[in-house]
Length: 148
Image (tube, rainbow, N blue to C red; front, side, top):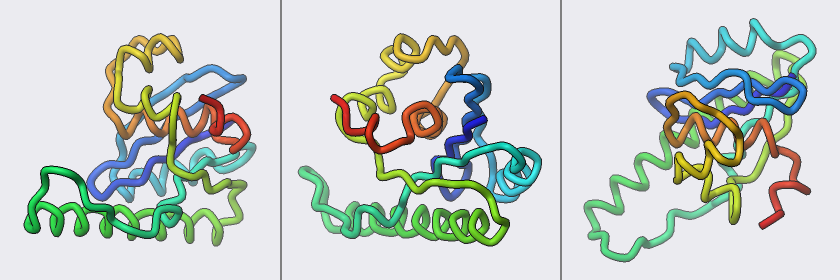
C-alpha cells in the first residue's frame, strides 16, 4: 500500500493507493493524520511532499506587500506541519519518501479536477490537497514525477 500526504495547516490531504489504484481520499487534521499513519504504518510506504524543497517565497505578479506577507505566513505554517510530519514518520520507523512538489503534467492534475478524474479514474469529490496527495501516492517516485 502507498499513502500520499500533502501537508497543510488546517487539513492535510491523504490518499491511499493499493495495487496502483486510488482507493481513498481524505482531508485530515494534524491529529487525525497521526492516527491515520499509526493505523496504516505496517506494510505501507508513505510519500510526503517535501516542504523544504522550495526555499524561498517568490514574488507573485499582481500581489502587493500585504498579500505577499500573508502568502509567506501561510507557506511557513505548511512548512511547520511538514516538518512535524517528517519527524513523526522518521521517529516512528515508518517507510517513507520525501517527494519534491509536483511539476509539469502532474501539477496540472492538482489544479484541474476534471483532468485529475481523467488521469486517475476517481469519481468522488476532491480538492487540491486531496488531489496532490493522490498524485504523490500514485506517481511519488521521482522518475515518474519528472515526466511531462
